Image 1 (cartoon, one colour):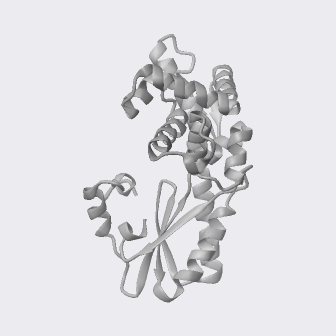
Image 2 (spheres, rainbow, N blue to C red; image 1 turned 30 degrees about the vertical axis):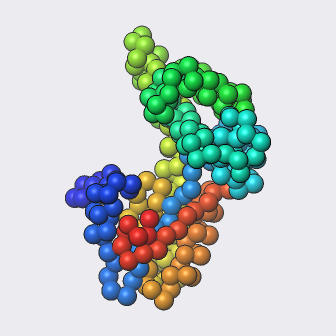
Image 3 (cartoon, rainbow, N blue to C red; image 1 turned 180 degrees about the vertical axis):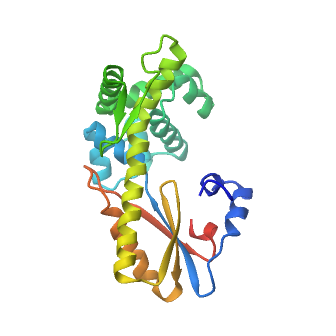
Length: 260
């Protein structure tokens, strides 16, 4: 799905990307159904790090970005978190997963580097298990030369002990991110296998037509949409067992854009 056309990289938020997605339609009598894992890499981070705060937030079904904002900015309740605070917390949550520095966070949020560093420091104070995980995974990578997904799949890091500081730093960022991205990739593949087994066994009136990142896209006969939605969510959410629940968001429409 990465060539002719490159479905993996069609923008989802730009006007042009949405126009392109509207060109993908089901056959008559069918609907497009898109099932997407919700915040899967953050959930995997919670699982791998064992951080109590993150585990509690996901177990309670809280909006983790609001929960992070409340912790980092000292807000009394998640209901009092502003849209701007949530946006900043979202950038911190995802930025740290991808190894973003305070400098990179400052550029993304349009704030001073010192303020961004304060956000990062506060984050690690509130979620110390995340910092401990990052330190541990870096040390393991330097010692072993590789990192692993939850399921034991390895990614070797030939530059992890490079003399060149930039190459070594890039490998360290990969060491932190790869277990999460790799585990997410493992889970979506396990979900595809489980969905395919269900389709082969029960012959429901639908087709699994593509996988895009953390999303599976289906063509579903109109009269069977509700049953298909329920079953797809059940199968995908049980594809793996983590310390936090897996959640799946589902959209239905007359084209891929409407279903997303």
